Amino acid sequence: MFEGQPQADLDAVFQSHPEFRRLYHHHQELDKKVMDAELGVLPIDDTTLSQMKREKLAAKDRLVRMYDTLHH
Image (tube, rainbow, N blue to C red; front, side, top):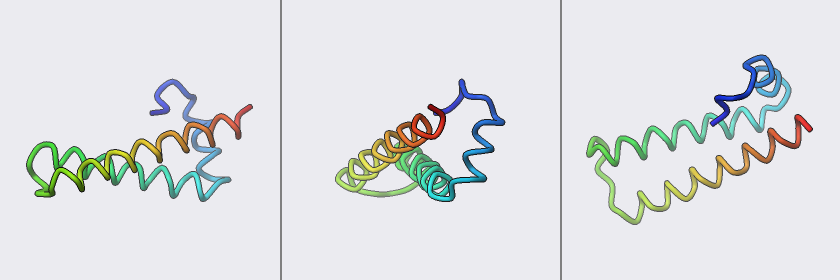
């Protein structure tokens, strides 16, 4: 998600903004669960999977907005 950003910038945001760090880890957790569900490792229904995907996308959008606000 932040592949093009310097690691030092990301580290600084993680250190100084606990909400960003929490949301980033939440997004990572959702990403893993969605991947597991799509691979059949995590048995969940389609409605729950769709909800998790929407939540993951919302978290990503918020993270990008937060990062842009903090760096511009």
